[in-house]
Length: 394
Image: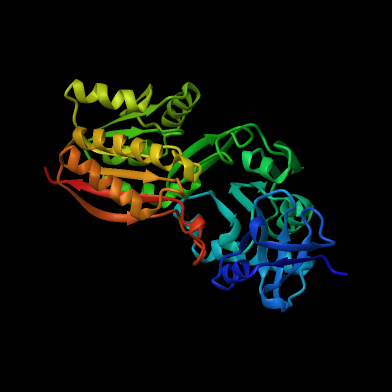
């Protein structure tokens, strides 16, 4: 008998609305299905059995089902190759590499109908993340097709995110093919970075902000303050439009990376400090400092629903302080990568911060993650990055 998972009426309704995930609470029965297997999904509501398609199954995660298709299409080697070809063809169609960029996302999980699989391209190297039991089990298949389709010099598995623990999987970093050096040089929008794909955040760079950095460059001017700078993505991209740049990050390793990348790009108007951004914003305000452009790109403050209230307080604090530091006519680029803080809530936080600053702010652009990180309609979890560009009237 084929591995089969029977789901409740609520689970069926969720799939029919276009969401690929079914939670464990909506699993009615599991027949002959092991960890990470591809299963038939059927509905057991009302005593009837309706075939709903095929899915990846996890026997550990709260996300028990990740739908692959709502048809009878066979899930075989050709299926996986076709999905990968579709993802790669899309990146070619949006011409990422024509924008002086050699680092971008090649496969974006659910957004490319390849749930829980991430593949980033850094020049001639691929960095892969298999974030569920099924993608971990299928990793050799994906790697074989990726090598045939893209011919990389090396493929690295950055299977070290904590989310793998929820699947009962180990956190590990493994060379899967060829060679991948400790440091890799890439270009993004004309800026060259040397990054550590073995140990850096995510897979090495925050690739989802690339288009927002290009957009912010057209607004940037005067004195720039870049907060939570990490590798200096915004600071380096906006430096050519500004008189001076001050980049802040709490990590000494990140600060050293910013300095090295600034030197690599012959950027001389950039200063960098190791600092707690919350404390430094207060100190800059007390000192009477003012900036014409401020960027807030913090790490995710809310990694789960329970953290939303505390996260909202943190977002309000840094935005309020930034608005106080912003000179009239200045521009604030403020971001949130916390999925649990949705666009509506983030907008409300910005409004509250402006009221308390007090500052008259106008929203001039509302943006999201780059096009190589597509959002699957009906799946709000795939729309995680919010980027608001605001101008201070007074």
